[in-house]
Image (cartoon, rainbow over all chains, first blue to last red; front, side, top):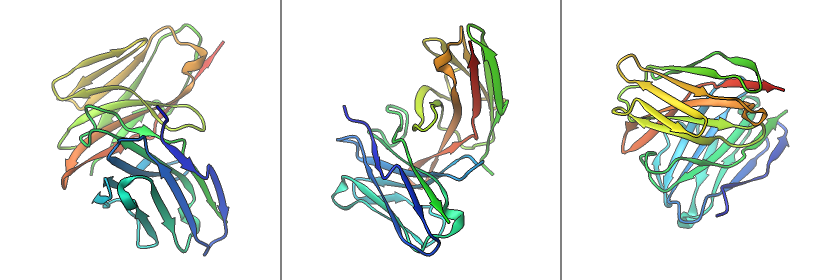
Length: 116
Length: 114
């Protein structure tokens, strides 16, 4: 099966610009998650979709971040306007089982975002 | 505060040797604990998972242990190979607001030398 794919793999933008990250989960996975790893820190949860609904968005840092999953397939994460502290690697993951037990999180390779 | 602490931060071993990575957590309530392997430039890949009632789980040369009383886990790698060079991340999940939130450790960077 095809894995989780993320686009772009790298993005370099200036402070104040807008960037949109895309994630295509594994086909049939209703659960889609966004995570972020800031340099030197641990990976942190951003939000969780079940199909097209936001199940939990408690990890979203502020209202400059907007995630969507129209139609319950692929998802986008928009950062507008980007700030320097937004730099990091953004991971997307999907799973069949929302408890995380019966099926693990399948991660994409991440999008490395650099804000200058 | 829910935290996952891993040690050592980095480790260098010779090919063929064994090693043990540690994970201590304060996450509560506890749902499950997973160890992930992350190769450079790639996303993490699940190695093992354990719930509260399980204390050992093996996946090939990888053996994870869990002591839920002391909130400690370890990942033992036997007969290391060059391909084991990667970051190993301990992830502890807890239920919250209808979802399960994973809390990630910072990982242990393992380098296996020939």
